[in-house]
Length: 510
Image: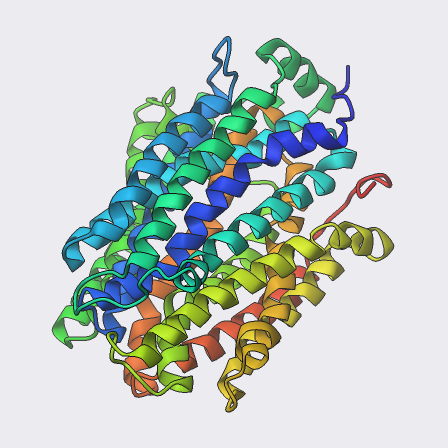
């Protein structure tokens, strides 16, 4: 028994929800730094305020993936219950976020909003892997990229469009402009409608059918039976490594405190390193005591036993998303300060530049939508990893080009740098997932898609912890240099992608 080949409109319907999901993410990415600055945040403090977004993804996505693998609702299926719950929560959060009265409230709402969006988004990746045969995977993820591009374009343009219609784009100090508020309201409604479309217009294979597919895969990963002795030895290894990593995290945290370095660095040392060490230590204690029948141990051990392709793609994802996060955090202050020479959030020049950032984000997304279906064609003529290499290099050059803009026209700011970024974005959203899906066991598709998100959110946490330090310590608080660092990182990701062992069937890109 094989998964049937789906028609165009079936793939369309199962991907349509991403239109709304990406509208939520795009409103967040293009406007949250603006909201933070409006509520009084300094440029050097913006990265640490953003830390909520990747941290929620790090926690939420593997858990939702693990749970959705084991879920079956007679009417909503395996993944769609999570689409629905996440959409309702995210839509409510989008209504509340632009009405934040103070900075700490906005930072907390970012946490809630991002967690809700992640609940909807994570199962969508597994949804494609569940429903499509191998030869349609690239096409399926390309369709998602198309809707991501369209949704993000519309959402990023909303403040500009509402300003054109006469909605106020400026406000007194500490007040978020109406153009931003109404954009979030529209995004919240669109999010819910788009996800509901996929929920009611799509179907899923039953657990019995999925079991047949898993058996047909003849996947050695699923058939591996681990003895109690294996768990004992693995537990000892985790315990030892956990102690070492935790000590390293605590020592580096002390040095940051002692030498009064930037507090953002605590995210890296206390957050990532120390908590990672504690997770390993707990896993070791559980396995040593033969307490192995629990989700925590399963998640840690499956992370340890990732397929080879996934491990290789991890580095590509790390440097790609480090670059993207530097852009999302610093684009608004970089454009307003480096190009328009202002940091006054109440000024016309600042808000003109902030609106142009929205237009830039809209443009790279519409470019991504336009090239989404060209990438599979190029991949079929060359290879997926070479296609990804070209796209990432183009994106890195696009980010770096912003440093050299001296004549701020619509074309030089809103379009020229974003062409390369848009090509990279389309590839980032599709090709790594297509390469990954074919190497994953069907029974753990949701979980591994969630774990793959580690290599999206960890670089974002690293960016949030060190970019503020680098910009303040070495670049005199000039945010444009964060974009230069991001450009170099994306080009590096492109070269690493050439090393991925992407073995595919001859029909993979059809």
